[in-house]
Image 1 (cartoon, one colour):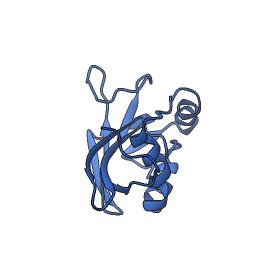
Image 2: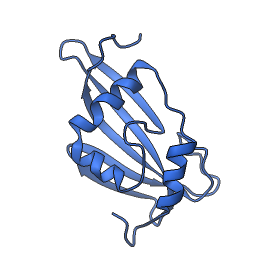
Image 3: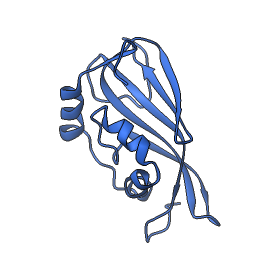
Image 4: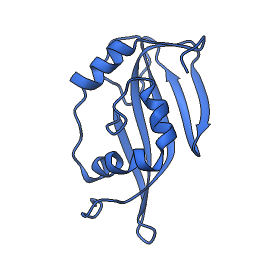
Length: 139
């Protein structure tokens, strides 16, 4: 996806994900880590082209847990070191809504990575995963 719309520093992005990212151990994040790649293999491949740790996003936001279907909805965010030449680039992939969201000096993107400018976020929405852990979701 690297083209006229974005410029990526793969080396610095990879270093960020290897050295600076703390992996959350809550049940929701553990479930995401276990289930995402299996349920979204092509999106996982896409994310890998950006040099991120697919199983451990910058932040996951769990939403409604469907007790009957044992499924949970998420939003997830990944930080990329580089420049997005547009404020936002939307796309759909494997039924997910994906947005590449640019960061400008002074804007308050949430979540805010501990990464120097320039960077941008990949925002995944409508992620629906089965609950694969033995333990129940946290209340």
